[in-house]
Image (cartoon, rainbow, N blue to C red; front, side, top):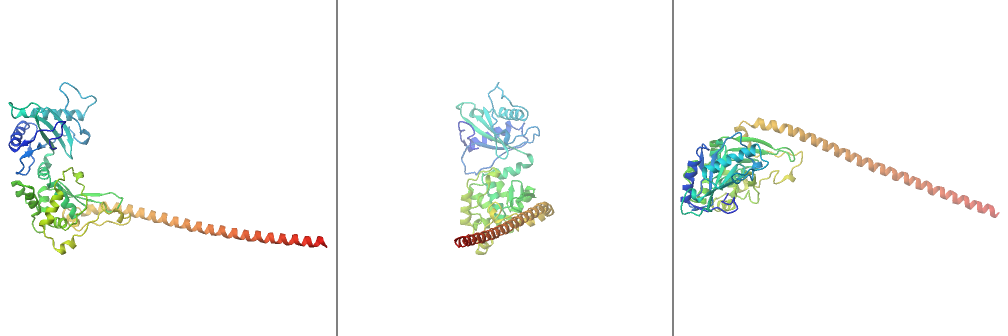
Length: 398
């Protein structure tokens, strides 16, 4: 979290200090976590705001979610009033982690996964000659063992996850990259439920489908341009070839990607897109093939209750490949039945409204005719009375 989780900013670390602190953490925390991995960063980076660690965490009795955000260490010998149950277990666990590193304090955050930010004094690694108040920040991300490898790839280098989200959204607004899996999130009818189906749930299969050379990732990167080259160098026929052609052709220009949903940093994405457009040649035929993408999120006014938004061409093969096409059809069926019912009711209300309007117009016309008839009759009576009065005058005068 950039070394800014506490009231006073943490000291920045040199790469040598980062390596030394990493070794200390791996040794001190080995009894608590079965696996500890440091997030990767570009090798040309010489100054670091904090140490980011991924730690294998699978404790059924300790639930750490958004409800626990803001829980912090308290002064020794004091109690947190009103806390019970899970919060107490969370606090004790964080205290155990903090004590193992000799930290002066901790704060709990949640970015889609829990992070314990620790305030580790310099004296832990350099017992003498250090200012006692100075500290480093160590962020411990707690990740399920099955997800740790996926988080290691997608959380390292800050930008990888955001770029893969961008690529999948360029292929189809219904495709969502979720670190270890690829999911379908499709709303076939505006205003109706979203259908969610996992299309790929194996990490190696996902990297292969995307077209990523993971051996290059493991070798590391000197700078961000090296990351750009790695993520855009893909075998023919792989998903990322089409995705980057779309982005380079301007398909995603002006489209807001909901990165916050994935709790990731987006620093550098505009720079990547600019680099891609400057370095990737897209033929005119490719540009015409990769026109603007529309979806319920981007063009909801184009849909009504009875108009289905079809699946993009790339999604149907993925549904077949995963054996989920029948599942998708089964989920669409009740939605479609509900849509037909709504459309029928809407048409019925419309017909009733039009009938009521016609009836009102007919009644109004009838009332107007009766009024005209009454007025005509009234005029005739007045004329008869006037004639009678005139006759009386004549008779009287005789």
